[in-house]
Length: 111
Length: 114
Image 1 (cartoon, each protein chain N blue to C red):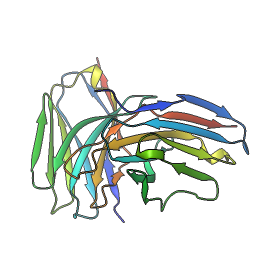
Image 2: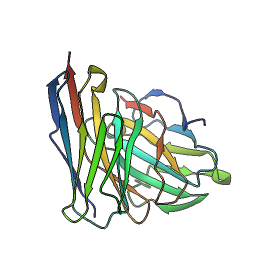
Image 3: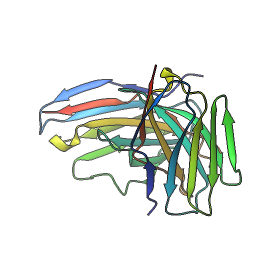
Image 4: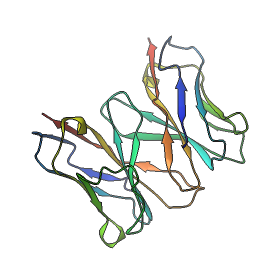
């Protein structure tokens, strides 16, 4: 069964810093990996989806990379802003089209 | 395009009562999911539908949880009777059903069982 781990569980940074969130998964036979953002009391907002054949995806200040062979993905956030404060979840997608989620990283960006 | 609609947004019930949640996916999305997210944890899959058929319900506590997706569109998730440990956010998501597409989540229903 796929297990997804996210480190760190919580992160606090001053505004303007670049930061990296880590995601690891135990079964490298994934079809894609998706990063989500979750604000308190809200649902999940999709940020980036990386196909298994891709190495990275970029959207604005966000860049996500994928290394299937080592079972790792990272989410890089450049020039962090207070509005980036949220919980970030990664999810590995299996062949059955199921998402297996990590427990998330709670990010706080201090003005 | 309209997003995934869920109702109600919040529900408070006493243990042993029953409750139902409703989800309307994005039009044309063949696959619909129900996830349970307990505070501080990542979402956990309860059930996956492909059109109106069940693909995976291996983690659904079938003694108390049930779900249906009539006509392959809307879906309802029911809990009867509820337990304290069912307190969680219940998220509905939908996708085209192809592995190359992403997933869209609703805002969720926050259930508190007292």
